[in-house]
Length: 85
Image (cartoon, rainbow, N blue to C red; front, side):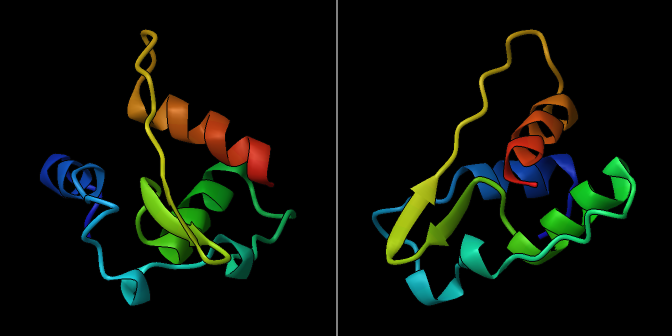
């Protein structure tokens, strides 16, 4: 999916009860080169995980929700990815 407003809305709307588990990326398979800039690490994470709102961690399907708290989607994603890398 594309990182357009409609693409982001589609990613966010994935229902973990009905999603095809085989279509999800396992977080354990994501590898980020820590020598990349922060912007490049974020782009690489999104490229690999495909949907930062819904993915697998082992056998568990994970559905993320980012609270706004006055922050943009990019800010929330940046903070989230910072905890993973």
